[in-house]
Length: 213
Image 1 (cartoon, one colour):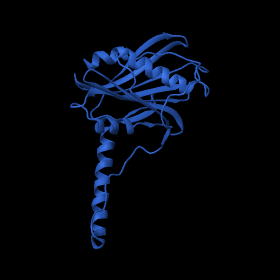
Image 2 (cartoon, rainbow, N blue to C red):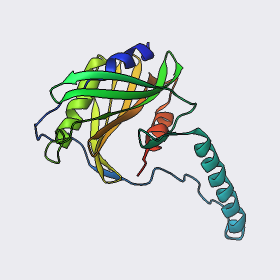
Image 3 (spheres, helix red, strand yellow):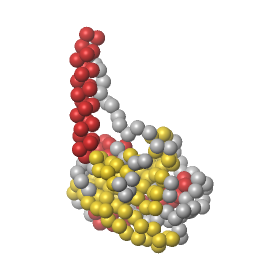
Image 4 (cartoon, rainbow, N blue to C red):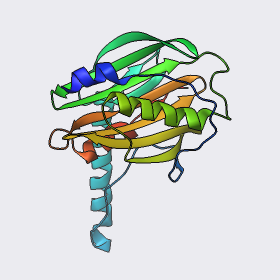
């Protein structure tokens, strides 16, 4: 079911509306999180530091092992397993003919992880309309899935304007993030039942996205 929905999900439009999405803007520059805490006594500090360092090393090895890199897409992200793709589709829009490139890891019919990107024509997305375009794209994406945005927040990812948004369709949780890097539009996230891909797993995947410079 989820795989079929992804085939319908991508819809690209342009807007000159300067309306800004609702939500608090946050800056995202470092996609790693250290959840280890030193709960030992003062004289156990060295031991706990070593344990934390080992945990961090193991986490880095796991992240490196699962890291997926696209030279053409100029991004990396930590899929749980290697994704299928690239799948390329073209769309005729007000901005012209756009090509959407998508990578998908289908965990099951109840859950998928994916990343897509699309290059817009020069001048189609500007500082004046980028936030409105992000919102329009998110709304179109959710509409194609038969859903709507329940929550959204503006963000900056390595200095680039982005949007996090989420919603539901039946038992499926749709958890997404999008960002414009120049004229390239990235969208990535999960569509899954909570029992198949937890919110924690989804956020870990989304937070691992990095733009290659």
